[in-house]
Length: 330
Image (cartoon, rainbow, N blue to C red; front, side, top):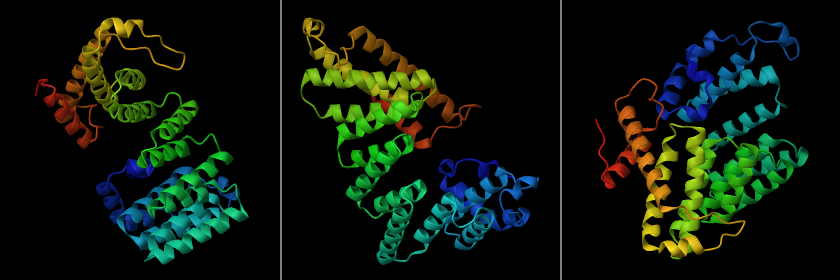
């Protein structure tokens, strides 16, 4: 059995999803469709969580590849095993119907059905998330933001929802709200290096538009702190070193234009980030350059243990190094 069927579906590429959907009929034939209702199913050896994780992930792959027949077969088995009232199954049913509707009228009907389900059971978090996802896919960003805010009032410890709210705010250039949302996600998942790096990216983008030297130093210093934390938690994280390289480069440009006495003498309040000293920025820039060069080199050569990087990210890192005049040993 392919290990891809046991991995979260979001980690699969389009090619892998297509490959799995093409294998779906054979996989379903190997997986017995017979099962007892819960809790009697606990007595059956071949009715473990792995079996149903395979069905669910295969369903997602078939939906992505447009294999409606196999997706429906997976869904029917899940409904028979867990019941149509199971919240997770209800979310899968909603996703299937979303994929099947031919026009906007059908999507509007789906929105109404989600709203009705939410009125009947406000604590059905999966249906609430499907409602937000459908609003977003239809281009109703304001409605999606409002629905997510309502969702988080009920379930404020959902880090995934905070991250999605951040991206919605970011798409509307509402940077302070996006930053706040990621800070809330970090309270829940303080060791998530990807969230630290994403926070650094948004701080960097919001700072880059400023023309005030004090604001630039404060913003880039904060972004740098986020990127440093991300690579502290994951020492081979490409996006963290990429952001560290960008933010230190901008800091060096700003610091070289500013007199040292004005940087040192400026008072720092409790809610501000202290200016990064020039030698520190230089050393961190050198570190980011060397680590990016190593990652690009080993990822390009497909060295064992270095295969997990996205090709687009490796290309972007190489271009950044080339622009900076760094040489990469090939």
